[in-house]
Every structure is written in structure tokens, then in C-alpha cells.
Amino acid sequence: MKDINFMKFLRDLCPESIFVLDANIPKSKYVPISLSESNGILNAIDVSSSDVLAHFVNTHIKKHNGEVAYGGYLEVRNIYKRSTHFSSQAEEERNIHLGVDLWSPIGTSIYTPFDSVVHSFNNNENFGDYGPTIILKHTLQNVEFYTLYGHLSLASIDNLEVGQSFKRADKIAELGGLL
Image 1 (tube, rainbow, N blue to C red):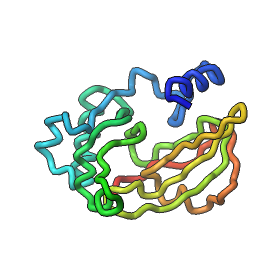
Image 2: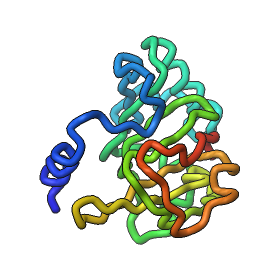
Image 3: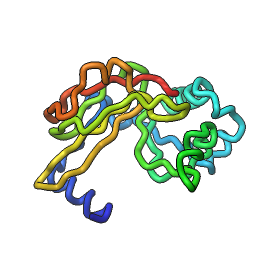
């Protein structure tokens, strides 16, 4: 299914907004952020440090009077070079971000956007990797698709089971820190 058809499919199923963070956060408090290689500011900071990178993002959110920074889909990112995990695992170095980031404070609650079943979960402990991660499987009108939630708290995966069900808007996890 092409991306544009999938987006239409989702809009047709659910014309109202879908949330994975607190629905009470106003859309005006979501601020875009670029972590792409074209963001020259990132070339001046030590992105190999998770603390420095988190400080950069948190400063960006405050500067723009936001609560959540978002972005990242298909960005070419130099930050993947901070970890050998993204170059030693494959024939070709990974540098393209394949999801949408939502940056919010540690402890922020995460909710499932649709009824779901836990497909898998793991603590991906490599430097720069997802950390505690949950992958949910969704089935809407006989179409299966998956959503991934990374950088979660360790407690978020403590009592999970593969096959465990969640209803739309159930809390599934809390954000943790960066690796």
C-alpha cells in the first residue's frame, strides 16, 4: 500500500486527531525540530553525548514555547554516526530516520492510538539505539500495521506479554531517556 493511500485509509477510519501523548496538550505546543544533517547547529555540538543532544532538544522546545518537539520522518541524520551499532550491523550504513519523533519530558505517558496487541518488546541497549521498546500490532478493516515506541522507561516493559491487548487510548508506557 502506498504511503498516500495509507494516510487516506487512516483519515477515513478516524477523521478526528489521533494521539499517542496526552490529548490535552494543545497542538500549538507541538514545535517542529530538525535533527537532519542539514541542521548546521548540530555540527557545532557533541551529538555523541545523549545529555548534550537532550539539552539541545529541550532548549529548542523552551525557545519555541512548546511542550513537545516533533519531526524526523525520512531525515538523513548524522547522529547515527555517533554509534557503531548503525554501521556494523549492515552492509550499508544507516543514516535515514524511519519514524516520527515526539520529544517530551521523561515520564510522559504514551497511549495507543488504536486497539492493539503487543507484537514484541525488548530493551535495545546498544548506544544510540531505541532502549526499552514496544511494537504494537493494529488491525483495522482487515489491514494489519505496526507502531513502534522507543526510548521508554524500563518499567514500561516489565510486565508486558506478547499478545497482550490494549484498547484505543489506553496508557501503554512512559518515556525514558536517551541511550
